[in-house]
Image 1 (cartoon, rainbow, N blue to C red):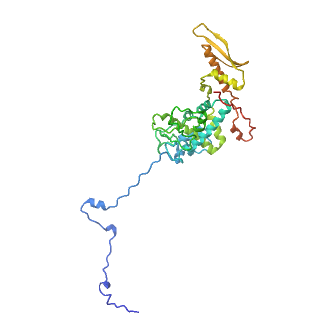
Image 2 (cartoon, helix red, strand yellow):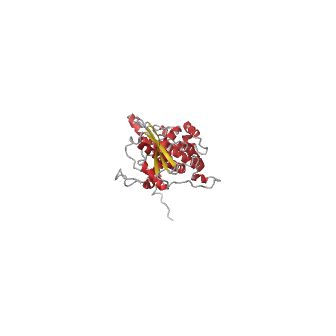
Image 3 (cartoon, rainbow, N blue to C red):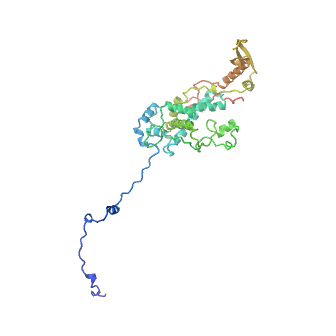
Length: 380
């Protein structure tokens, strides 16, 4: 092992360095000729990013809304339906596009349930209604305009504009059109743009169109022209979403009872929807189809034949059975009115108000099912 020679390490390497004490940092000062120079050296605070506001009130504020509590009590909703779900019912997809917070899923479920119960009630109560009249009657009970009136009677009010600061008990919506999606019931017709006067048959209306037999169209850009329709659709979605929420939390029986109380309890006379073009021909074809004797018009009574206001009463007979009668200022008008009354008496046949529907068989200890009489359809 070699021995180190200290001669090589002599010099500055072995000289002792003077011990210097560093001043504390709070005693160090820096002189500047101008105040701006000192300001540059100071650390600047980092700016916080702006917080993004929510499109609608958060669900945590639902418990503090007096409007929601009043609506929950006014509708006599079960306690199983939480107040947060009722707040979600009032949020339209136009206000919040997130399906986890709007009522799109609940309204789709509720629309299917409402249309099912209303349609089975109509078919069992008026089994001879023509399909076109059945569509309009279904619209009168479950259409957007009818559900809009139901929602207004509940006391639901709409906010001027959706936002985080708005009360959770107000309807959140914006006048914006929603594009058709796969969740809609129906198809876009390829011949809609080709010809506006293209004839649509009943079969194509059942297969291709929506629940009410209307053509599904792409939303137009003119919001002002469709404001009333969008306004009614936003309110109708509240009723549909409420039924969907009751079905999700309380089951089928509670949803059916709610529909019966708020929708089917409304009175509507489908006789105002009929408009016959050839009533005399149609009553003749009806009697021939059903095997009845040919209809015959007979004058029952008259008054003022030579006056300015004569009145004739004409009745339609099939053999010895009287089908209907009508009055008019002339024999021809009275005969046509009698044919219309006879046709309405046939189409508006009803076994009664308390009719059994297929959904009644889902109840426990239900009686055996007796199928109602379903007619083969309209004559013309």
